[in-house]
Amino acid sequence: MTASTDLQPQAPVAPEIAISGAMRVVIALFIAIPLIAVAVAVPVAWGGFLGWSDIALFIGFWTLTALGITMGYHRFFTHASFKAPRAVKIILASAGSMAMQGSITQWVADHRKHHKFSDEIQDPHSPWRFGTSRRAIAKGLYFAHMGWLLDEPQSSVAVYAPDIAADKDLSRINRAFPFFVALTMVLPAVLGGLLTWSWMGVLTGFFWGTLVRIAFVHHVTWSINSICHVFGTRPFKTRDQASNVAWLAIPSFGESWHNLHHTDPTAARHGVLKGQIDISAFLIRCLERLGLATDVKWPKPMRLAAKLKDPAMAPRIRGYAAALAAATPAAVPAPSPVA
Image (cartoon, rainbow, N blue to C red; front, side, top):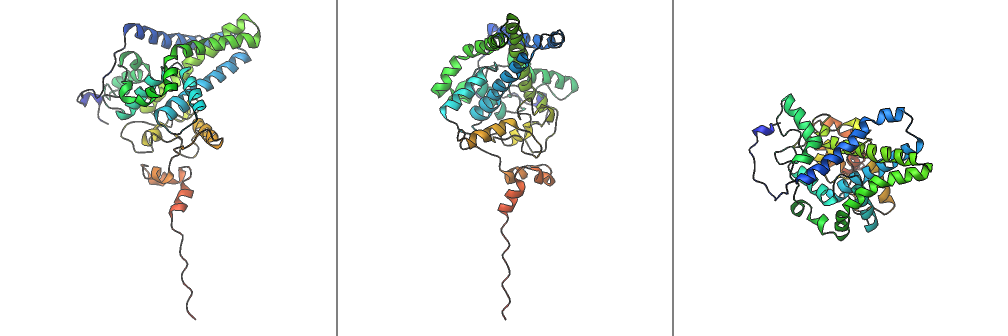
């Protein structure tokens, strides 16, 4: 791969908005406070301040908000991997907003720009930005993980996400982002108090269901930007360094099968090889069977087989055998000899 230091800077293709000083402070607080909570999570748990209600709140809000990002912000809104009724659209957009990773319009704009310039000089969060030496990659990993949130100008919504901004429902949800931030922070504490009927339940619910959960969802998502562009396997041909990282598959609900995603960005399933767990794809399939997801863009096995670096891996693609059989003309029986 060509080091980013060898790339000639290009003229911006779209107007970008610089991050103000006040916004930098807000973003830094959103990053730092949950991260501090993670640092003290083990001693807090060891001290007995972790109950079943806290575990339930952590898992529940992690699932809700992470799926809001994977199924909603990413596969539905950014890549249009499927269509859904208005109610599903609103639920997914609201759940994604509660992940506290930014408003829906800005998230979609940043991600679409990432795909357009993946691992090039204009990619908002490429870990290869500073070169290919060990020091440059270490610096790039930090930048791709969370440094870009403070340093990189915001991608133009007008250029990269005009369809999201034009949708009346999504526009309202975008403007209501501060409300969803407040909701995602307060609701676990309220539920913790109601479940235990105690002020300690309020405190521990806020700690585990809000702070630790937000940090966990943040860092799993950010790991797709950083780890999944440096480490892992790359069975499919791509123009960038997107890779598969198996141990992130369950925490990310299937997003870490990143190599395939950059091969076929609109596909609703990212884990296309046998044994690759993709919970988001499974849930999209469930919605499809319930009639709540239509026009789902499932991967085409024969098309994916052509993109493999090693053609011998083709039988590992889900549905490949059936697709091959359907594509192979049936043998025509030889005519019987004339007596």
